[in-house]
Amino acid sequence: MICKNHKVTLTSVVFLLAFSGGACSQQDSDDGHDRRKNQTLSTSLSRTMFEVQEALLNEHYDQALIILNAIQSRHDDLSDYDKAKMLELKTVAHMGLEQYRRAAETAEQALKLDALESASRNQLHQRLFYLYFLLEDYAGAIEHIEVWFGLEQHPDIQSHFTAAQIYALTGRMDKALSFALKGMDLLRSSPERKPRENWYQLLVSIYFKNRNYPDAAGILEEALSLWPHRKEYYLQLSAVYRELNRELESLAVLSIAYQNQLLPRETDLDGLLQLYRYFDYPFKGASIFNHALEGDNVKPDEQHWRVLADAWLQARERSRAESALQQAAKLSDNGKYWLRLCQIAFQEERWTDSQRYCRAAIKRGGLENEEGTAWYLDALGSYYQNRVSEAKDNFKRCMDWPDTQSDCEQWHSHLTRILHDRRAELERKRRETMDNEQRRRQLQQEIDRVSI
Image (tube, rainbow, N blue to C red; front, side):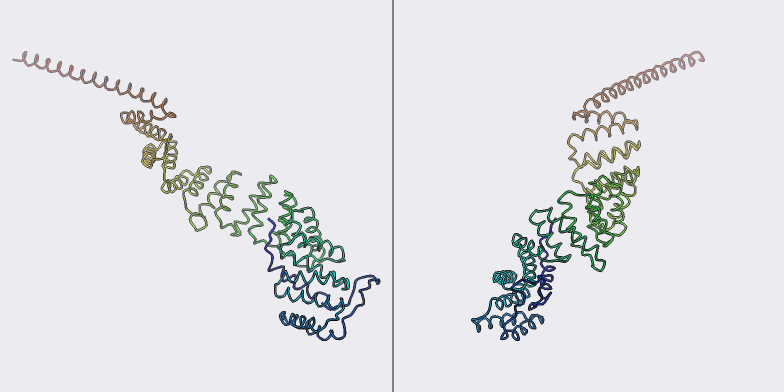
């Protein structure tokens, strides 16, 4: 993203430009044939103009404007050069008062007189491209950029990056990149220069706009070496590595950021967890996320408990996954997490727990077609605990859902036969017992009769 809001920083830059080279300087960079090269102020104005300069240097901008306006009102015979120098100083005063539109207008008037020496003209072009940038008049800024860079023999680093930003804001990314790279070359060839973050950020933005991820990675790596505690560089570099299919490096960058305590946000920690899971390091990711949930960095809501449960399950930490799912289930307005707990317990053949969870899922509701699964697993839990009649009743319940209808009908029919056979067997045994008892009584009666 190319940022427009640089007014505080750029105001100071423009103000510094106001006094670079001296507002009344007669020095010239021309090679000797400019008719304006040796012009000087009128004698009557020289002392007054020094008063203006002193006021400007002491930041008495209103006073400077009063003096300049008074000069204009007293003198009708000012030369174009005198007028231009006064407008030049007015430009400085308006800049100091943050009257950027007025400053730009007076600077344009000074140039229009075509009376200043080249050093002053050049300086005005530079001021104007900064002023128009502050005013978000990028077309005006570009006009003076092209003039100033054509005249200036040694443009400074800041001017290159300001020009790059202006071109970027107008969508001319090739020009923006050219200026930014030139500025970076100047920075690297001048070790005494202190690098600024906004220069690196601008170049990264241009690379992103051009989808030039390899070069963006290189600049971000360099930025991280200079500002190792800036979280956004870790996040951007990690994202760039993913674009370049360098996923392990993406994970490594985020891990370093976490170790430096630079990932307090939920989305950052969730991204780190997903990368750990992607590379099959779920235990590490789950441990980090669990710690964040227990602290204040991640909101302990339903979604985050579910994410943690998934990670623990991938790490084969079933008891921890179960605890996380219980937290999610308590916060959810439907029974889907209770059903999942039921399925986990069922796989581990914990029939009592499985039934408890399934019944909690049914009670919470909102399962839609999955309610049949809950009844199905509940029924199987009863069956495996040899509660066949209870199982048969629950299999009858799960016959009402399409996904479980066929299996439940088969189980219901099977258990119906089992119960029928059991009842028949019980009846047979009852009859056999009764027959044996009757025979025993008859035998006893025969014995008693013979004994008598």
